[in-house]
Image 1 (cartoon, helix red, strand yellow):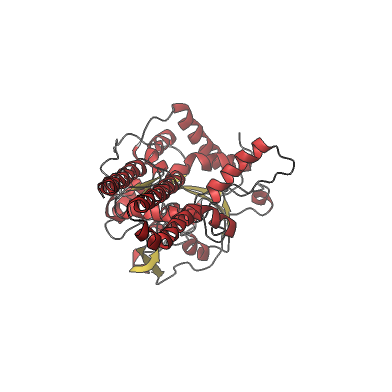
Image 2 (image 1 turned 135 degrees about the vertical axis):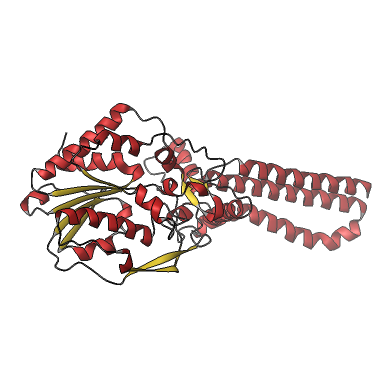
Length: 420
């Protein structure tokens, strides 16, 4: 009896140590894929430990109480089989294809099942290892569970790209440099400003009115919701340097929405908490500024008034791209404003416009499209033929991008227009 007691205490210490090591390990991981692999590793360790305990426990029972052991044999076999089934769950799930019907939000192509045909055994082993790690049974379920526990109970992000802010706000790590400044080479700034000016000259030479719209990063407008661990340096940002490089005498029609947003944020929320993008009200504020700029050249494009819009708070239930990056699209939801235009001050649709854009245009499109006879949106990732601007030229071209995409916008449009 004494031996069994000592062994039980030892097993309890093993379980406690395994849990402590798991919590310590999992909190230091900032990648959802690595978290899932770690979880699987500890589950296997637990299952093997329990199986060993049952075997030794059965041996002790057999030694001390053979009659009682016989009565418990069936129970122990069932328990042992259950634990080994747990160990085999990833393999069983892989065979049954449990992951194939579930969406993935990892923004990458998962490894495909390799074939031994025309492949040596070494390469096959390596490729199959990658395939198994990406597709083992219940992998996405484990990842979702792991991420939910870390976000909900430990208040930490399982992904380095997603920053857990205050009051349920999520932020995109890659935006922080653009939002608060850092070292940007002077040559890079001159390249951006020169490119924007050359674009403007190219369009002006064809009689096209060109507007470059920059939407501030979420962190720029709502720094108060960032975690205290984020060091807000308040240095000159790339956007600050670009605006300074263009100078007050530049004839580029550039709309920097930062001041308008900082003023408007006191009225309604402009961005989704769980998304990198502005919400419909933020897009409306951007729309106001764009129409003010266009109406200076085209008086028939009268800008709307704030009285022309009705904001319905908490009208939309939403889960944004940052929540989906965490594989928690169904768990992290929020209420967002709905915007309804009560009047449309656009009379005749006399203008054709081409919009070079990133994903921020999506919430802006419902406001802009009714104002033009024809509007052609072109994503930075699309292919575009500049002859479209010459055979049937638009009166207006707008480039709209978020603050962190300034360099992408200038490079893409330059390539389209063959501007060097």
